[in-house]
Image (tube, rainbow, N blue to C red; front, side):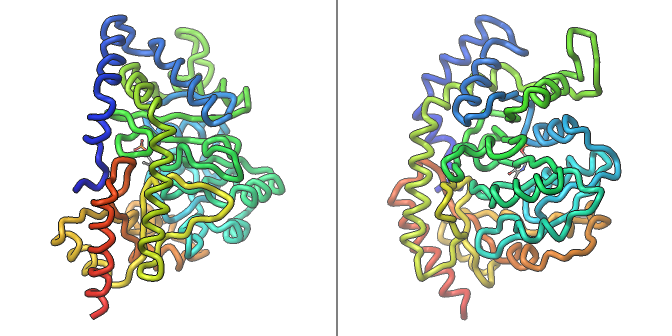
Length: 366
Ligand SMILES: *Cc1c(COP(=O)(O)O)cnc(C)c1O
């Protein structure tokens, strides 16, 4: 059994992917070819955001978003301590200061109430992460941002296809950032990502920053990065995109099936009623995790931990480990465990996972 079965997905889409790749090889526009714009238009339409700009990774998407809003050294950006390190990394790269607001214990999403506590006159932006494919309390977060004149950048690396009160992730705030890393809900076969916005000035800025701050060839009106997504990767995402609606349905079905099968036996990360998550990960919370994980490994069930250490407790981020504290993130980092998940997970394999998990949790009690 695979943790994320990319091979089964490839078998399904093989000829479409081959055809898309062949088209690029034939036209030869490897950088900024026609597939780049085609993908951007399809993704913009999909999310409802007016503009989509493809970039070289999810990390670069976050960096470009922060550069576009003009983050300067010393600015404070509020984010979650419980995410992949890239969320905070880009803040530090710009000389800004990540301020970590604790998470909700049941969803592991950033707590809107804790965000309020973190605001100072130097706060510029909030980066909520749609962790495990579920958006945070975006209405509350956007309202806080409006009150204090802040920008909200959704880190939607795990949540493309998710909805919040009927609106799509990546279109829930000023800017949305996603990733096409292979194991994300919509993955390419290398690195890729995208930024989304409905603000025309920010869209223009992000388009320019993506290509070395260039407004026309060799005219550099701002400092940018080498952040393009290559044509072949865009072509691969386009081929996969035709299956994406079906895959989202499967993810939601399989996630709900896990919830039902594990109910009253194992604590699953909670799903809020007003939003649909895409289960970028299906994650449970257990005690005595090392034992649970080892028993599952022996049973042939691969698992992963998202994430074992809160970002401010990582060595490189120790200087940002300031009050307020984040006890919930600390506690959950010792308890979370992600199970095999993906649109191609068969009911049979899922039953095997559930059976093994229930046994492992029981065994870890003794
Ligand atoms: C994967 C991920 C990123 C980084 O995306 P890359 O494409 O790997 O650079 C950022 N934030 C979160 C929450 C992620 O899961």
